[in-house]
Length: 135
Image (cartoon, rainbow, N blue to C red; front, side, top):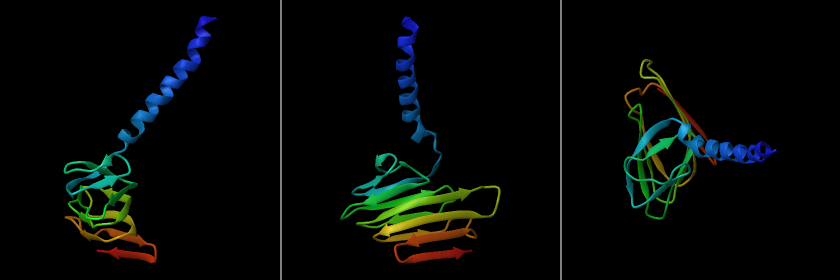
């Protein structure tokens, strides 16, 4: 009879443990190399130099904020002040010659510079249209 009382408690404990590890299970696609004075990621909260960034993460900056991000293929993304950029997709295989990057800029400004694998596909979605670039 007492063993039945443990089943709901054990189920809740497992559920909380799975929720706590879910964001950590996702693989990082790059790092923030510098953040001035502040920026925030939707996965980890406030970003700082050395913070990981993830696919499907949204990076937001404040009135004077700027975030410099470097991806695994050495591509760089600078997110300007008052901006919101979602890192929709990042595919990189160091053994192949192509990379795929898709970002969604919903507000503000950004600058993207391709890395060592500059012959990949880049897609930038904005509220007004979509820009696709192939190397």
